[in-house]
Image 1 (cartoon, helix red, strand yellow):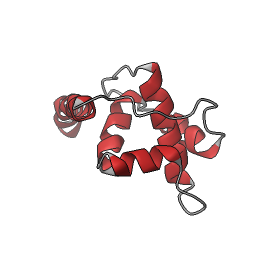
Image 2 (cartoon, helix red, strand yellow):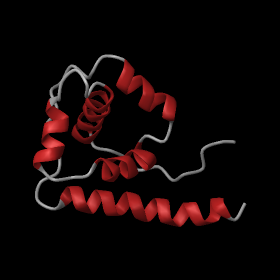
Image 3 (cartoon, rainbow, N blue to C red):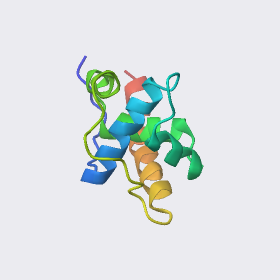
Image 4 (tube, helix red, strand yellow):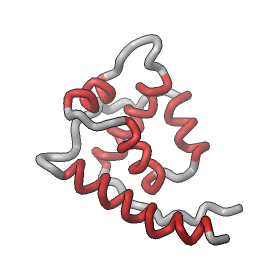
Length: 106
């Protein structure tokens, strides 16, 4: 079944950060990476980033590759000034909410 979720475009910095974050999540037992530390510092729950990833990077094979391969060469920086992270997560959840009820109906 093709992925029919709406897709959200990420900025370059958002993409780099989220790829680092996926890598950090996959390797949390060996060390806590900078993206994970930034996530904790900014008090964003992992599930919030999962919603963002569901619409920004819906291909689970791409997510797996980001976690299993090498992290991006650029260091992660927090790409959301002020309340921008909350706004982007709300945007992602809104996209998911619009699409998921239709998917459940068949």
